[in-house]
Length: 386
Image (cartoon, rainbow, N blue to C red; front, side, top):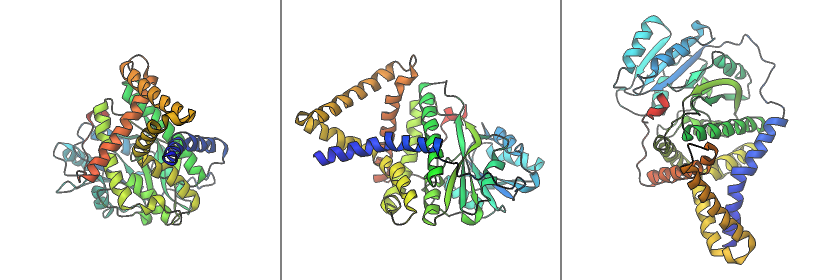
């Protein structure tokens, strides 16, 4: 039981505190792996692919954002892969396609999810570089150029931009999600400088078309692409100055629903491809350290917390450290409860509750996986669309 206690405590602290601090430290002190000796006139043909389903609320702004990017119009192909949209999304895209000849609409006849839409669009894409975004993500005008420039490096196959949430003052959930992504972006910078990213942000990334991998529709590019590329010793890097903006969900219900769906698909991939998360011999060892520390331990966090809590109760009277950890559990739960009730007054106190919500979403996603309830397609969280 002591071994379970110490192992669980170590993994939780390593993932949530120690490793994250090491990555943040690396991001400050290590020389940037992003090359600054690149050709400024490197402007290959790019296919921008956006998967959409019933996005009539935001699609017009997205189209205007893309056509206004600082990239030669004759070298930018814009492909909207509609996952059988049933609202006015396809009609709006078609109207813009009459005005802009580089806009294409591909509509699937049956819903298959984002990755299925990507795989379909890939067959029509003419670009040397493929860029991917979401319908509600707005790119800074120079971001595409900044992403593409880094793909001149022969060792780099994939690049990920810097996502910023714009509505963190609207609710305690949006605030917490904003804090989470600030930490994620710092750790992404550290991972990139250490060796390679272990996950993407779905709103802004790009890769060389020759390195595109057809992924099962049930999974996601965000997690799978960097890992599959890592097996081939191909790097994914973070481009900090390639900015994109979007809204976070503003209610607990929306965030639980979104994260539950996300983690259901993650657990499906995790347990069916477990070697990618525990085998140190299939990657560069630096990448394995990042994958194990940042992904493997994270996806087991709910179970690590459960084991720690049970072992702490059993061992509470066996020594001071066990008693202190038990009191730590009680204090954390008390802070989470207090944070929930004081969320309108002191948003910082809401973070412990947000962490518990995060673990809850993981468990719900795991339950969906083991009961076969996961699905490849998505439902839009309304509060992320304004």
